Image 1 (cartoon, rainbow, N blue to C red):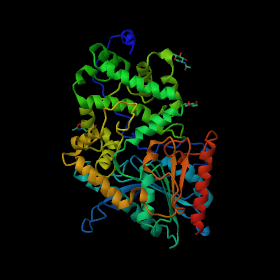
Image 2 (tube, rainbow, N blue to C red):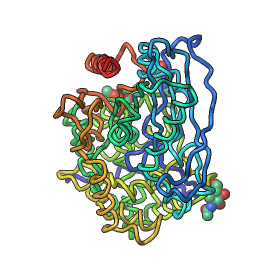
Image 3 (cartoon, helix red, strand yellow):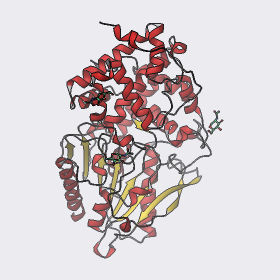
Length: 501
Ligand SMILES: *[C@@H]1O[C@H](CO)[C@@H](O)[C@H](O)[C@H]1NC(C)=O
Ligand SMILES: *[C@@H]1O[C@H](CO)[C@@H](O)[C@H](O)[C@H]1NC(C)=O
Ligand SMILES: *[C@@H]1O[C@H](CO)[C@@H](O)[C@H](O)[C@H]1NC(C)=O
């Protein structure tokens, strides 16, 4: 390989003590995977929605524990038409703060208007302002499970039926995207007498420790721009490996990738290096997962699409592939207002060990990591071959994080039994349900753990070519792909069919 490009790079580096919080980690966006909808609505049509609180049981599976806590929810009755048997629509909160914007925006609001539905959104326990315990100690997190969350939803439904004096045959329809997409299907599965149907978007139904297909889909999605993009990413990553081997190269990496800590200090620290490779891979994962959806999400980030990063990757004017990779990194750091690229493993672990509700990690990073370590796995490893992001973040790297954050019992055996237990409990991809629609997008890497083909007509799948994570949930836009528009229409028709039963 020609290495003249090494010499072209300059050699200064300003060391810094700045740390910055990872915006995208383990396939999860800060704030949760379902972004906030971008409003295409008339301001005047927006109803004022208030925060409300529901007294919830701490432990649904221990009748002798009478501890309760306050769970946040939102309601909107502006479309509710009880005289015509208006149904109730329930948006399930997930691995981030519940957003009030969803109460007046998004495809489900249009459905609610159509069917005269009463609308609720229940925030997931341990996320947002729904704090069941004083802190997030590992001991307290034992009440953070999907089973408890489903029981929260069931208790909530029962209570609202009573509060609103709803008739015994009232029909509840659940909506959820990402992890709540799984919850929506599981809610219908476990509580069919309470929930009549469910729209499950981008839900990973199969718990899996080594989710290596994630980066396979990322690669295939980048290939929708061009094979050259994929090749350039791979070459750029290979060049990082070359630079890491020599001191001059290490100094170049510091500068190119705006590393918060000089990589010379980490060169013998395998976990830092794994974290560096994984963070760079996540630059692309975050872009692909949310490509062109109608999400406001984090500032500016929503505008950075596969086309934007791939146009950079194939632009030879910028320099060799590693420089283009660095350019992508720079664009993302700047979009998310980050000063430098933080890949320090111990710093990350220390952040995630913080049990305070005031900590940065309490936005959901610690809680979601706990759920992956105890129920789901979902680790987006570099184990798929051939891999374009290097092979430095294997499954051990992620299991190590579980033990480092929560304790030594959360090891490989623990994770294997945990995911097996989850799949036994819910049925994984063999879940048997009716009146559920599974919706996925072809460029969303999470589709690899979901139901993308209709096996059972009572629980059909809609697989949308070319769309990203939860795309069908966001407010319709004129620029939407025709197949996305059609999917929203199909969902509307399915809900209509269920409600007529
Ligand atoms: C995103 O792109 C749109 C259309 O190109 C533009 O109007 C908007 O200002 C951009 N938003 C941000 C945050 O850069
Ligand atoms: C390629 O990068 C150069 C330098 O940053 C820029 O001026 C040019 O507009 C880019 N070309 C394309 C086609 O994006
Ligand atoms: C946890 O985070 C809080 C709030 O940021 C901070 O004040 C506290 O020092 C942190 N605790 C530890 C042990 O790092």
